[in-house]
Image 1: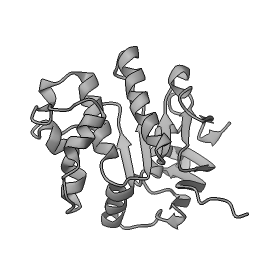
Image 2 (image 1 turned 180 degrees about the horizontal axis):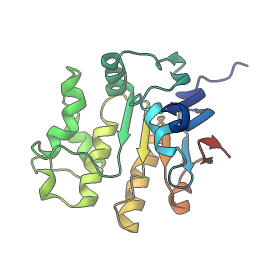
Image 3 (image 1 turned 30 degrees about the vertical axis):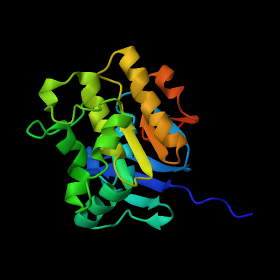
Image 4 (image 1 turned 90 degrees about the horizontal axis):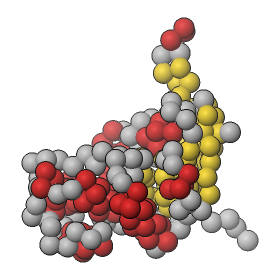
Length: 221
């Protein structure tokens, strides 16, 4: 029986900055795969390479060597425009500090990936309802709480047919109760068939994942 194709696969990824005495190896020959319906937690000390790993997986940064595959397709050497297009269509990213655009309403922030891709925005209200923000689409980011802003950021990451969800310390600026609610929302999307990569330093939040890997000095440990 053939093995299922991972939704996300990193093959022998290395990221090196600088040269000579200033050479820094941020990631050193890391390979990992995430299947549809699986949430993988990435843990490690500050500076270990966790966020670099997520940036490479999200096509926000090209690896020095190695390959990034989405549903079996090599996307690691796409042009910046093609990488942005692939990210809008297939990868949702949730950041610690929300990254909502302050001059756009909540609904406009959530619709932005669809607008940039020329797609219909008909699903925005449903996306907001799924994260508990029904009826709040007309508010601006400075008119909602931190927990609500993170929910809006999650709705933006989940909008459309995205098969990979990446979350970089999504609970870092939230209280424990709100953090649990954010992880519940992410977990529901993973259980519905997406693949997830969660960067966290909190074991209690990593416990929401199906498995955990440790990164130290740019290597799996």
